[in-house]
Length: 131
Image (cartoon, rainbow, N blue to C red; front, side, top):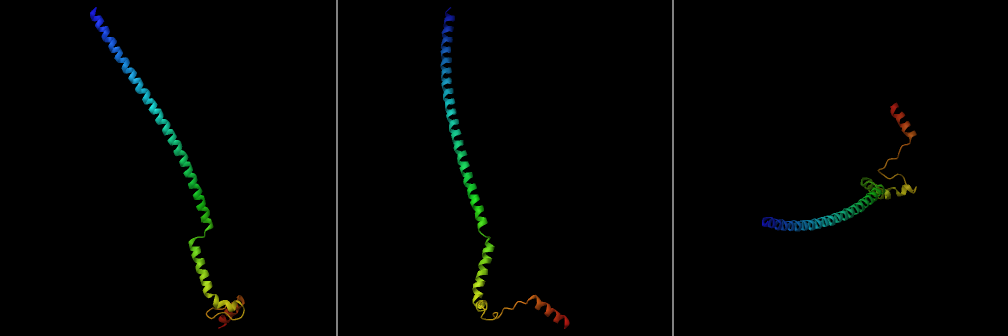
């Protein structure tokens, strides 16, 4: 009988140890799940914030792209601007030579040929053909 009593005391202690370990494990599991839930909440908030930030960045990029495309249509090509600048510089340079002619006070400036009319071209071609 004493062996049964000793064995029952031993089992009672073992039972208490197992309950204690179970309680500790349950506490650890609750803490772990709470931390996991907190971490998941934080990650969800971070993902939402990142999504909003990305959407705002995308909108900004699209707006900038739209403005640049509008600007491209408003500004002429650099080659066109260069040619236009050279053209007006040439006009300003030759204007004094042509000014009197344009005002009707003088003949065509020296160094410039008169343009032939179509009728003159035909008569010159006939004269050349006869020769």
